[in-house]
Length: 199
Image (cartoon, rainbow, N blue to C red; front, side, top):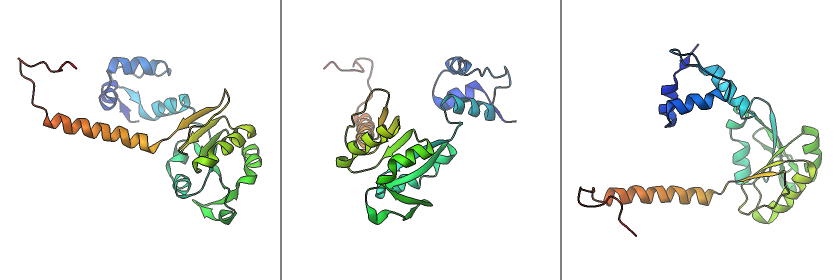
């Protein structure tokens, strides 16, 4: 049975080992002093706490390039997510296999959500269609939405939306690159120069 110490986990996560042990105690996992944590059991406890030990059926709406790429992502199944259906408004796509699943027409949305007890929807549509798709998903009973469409969605209370904005992610990376480049160009502060200059 492989084990890992709190010090090893803390070093990998960049946190204090005492804080890590305290956080793990909330999961009911105290580990064994001098031995550490049983890795398999710890993974199970964290997965259970995150809601990943059950099968979460997901629908992906919008099977263009991005939607097809998401459908082909192999990490869903290993983390407790099952793609229940792929939906698109383009009738020419209906029946085409993507990631082993037939693309179904958006007109089937409500019955698919009901038949598969879907609570999570992924939107990969153009911006102009995203709100209408959101409204239909919510009316059908979906309570969590992952939005890849380049628009802000309006949803009622009780519905969670996570927006994935690739341009913002790139801007964050550009900021970090700029900081790294700036650090390389800055002279090292000596004892006479303050490390932070006033604005």
